[in-house]
Length: 207
Length: 207
Length: 207
Image (cartoon, rainbow over all chains, first blue to last red; front, side, top):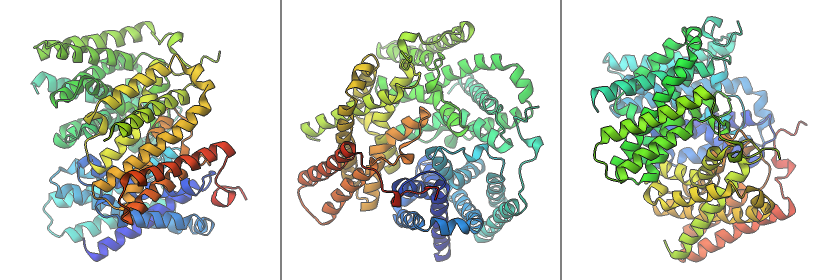
């Protein structure tokens, strides 16, 4: 992995750990609980991916991910009031985080020789899996029940990456940049203008 | 796997994906959420089994399972009102689904050389694991808290299969048919006559 | 594994299975549900550990763990009123259980050549993972939201074990005994005197 890619992955790890701690903050959680939630948000999705495709779990292979997640979660505890005031900035950084993790996961799974649908699924699982485990452990409703556009941009971007790969577009870097840009653009637009899934694509309308 | 066995496994996948979507329908879930719940219901149990016994996950090995689960979940979304009116039919098909998945799992685990208790456990995990993950993600009470006879027929049938195997009964096909028939019969009887675990086998009677 | 270590691991398995059943008792759970919760409490944490570090799952390798967990969970069902009256004794035995499971896990992970942070994480996951899955399935708030000192003693003890190992202290038995003693002492003190995390280490104070 290049230096830039590694730095971006570390940034994504920090952002995920911090949002994990902040997601816990409204509840009475102690330092232990908030740290566990932060670390799980940061490394949970990639762990599910690696266990499912049966490769060594990335933070066991390279414990720097675990140290960085732990450090960020511990630091976020005393700083949580300060960070909460910057919450919107964190949401935009989180958009970059899911984009980086999702596209990197799709690339890793394609490189293992798996097909396009498996790659998209693993991109999705890597991007949102940590947050899902965090919400379950914290007793919060999961993302699955939210109509916010969070996972759909991720699906669009990893889908684009897989299609470009399938079409034989050679430059992995350009493909990855396009896919990441698509995810970040869609997710930031959803944040900026409050985009939701339309009613027609929502069940349980009580009608 | 024979053609009939494959066709039945695909039928079970479709039924599980559809019941997963319908289980989500009472809540406000969008197309993304309902599809995730459908796919997880269909492939979640077998995924837990394969990861636990450390063999390649079946839908990574053969992505047709994933495509069929995805297609069925997507189709169930616009059709959910129609399907809900046929819900009892789906419950009976679901009985066939858990029977097929459970017995197939027990057979797979015995073939790997594991013992009878491990085989029964993996039959159980395969049959109900996807539904458990779905209920957790959808914020619904899990099957564990229900007194409906759902898992007990599955345990009886996989238990019968493992005992017949242990007794050296040679014909795998006959053994599997007997076990599947037992599960379907018990589960359909429970559905038809509203069988529950008796009070004597229930904790928390408030007495 | 020595005879004493094996006997202690079996004792821990029994205690975890029993506390799993008792944790379910306030709710209306039938024999199936309570047995599943008991078995998952007993073997869930070690299963998560083995799957994550990619070694054969311990109860598939040696099904005696599964038989003992199943037997203890089944026995705890009719005896639950009697056991509830002895609940404080069980809590102290549970302290021994998390100590044994946690230190044994850290040792196993270090022996596989992984680093100190991974060893402490796996000790934690092994000690509390089964209880976390049980609480999710039973619809109870998880340990993560509790301010009770439950996981912190475990972290302190596995941390001590890993530090002694890192310092090159040769006697594994003495190191393990010291770490287990530290966990049991801290946890029992927390139980005896109602120790909690201080307010300063708790988020969501509503202030």
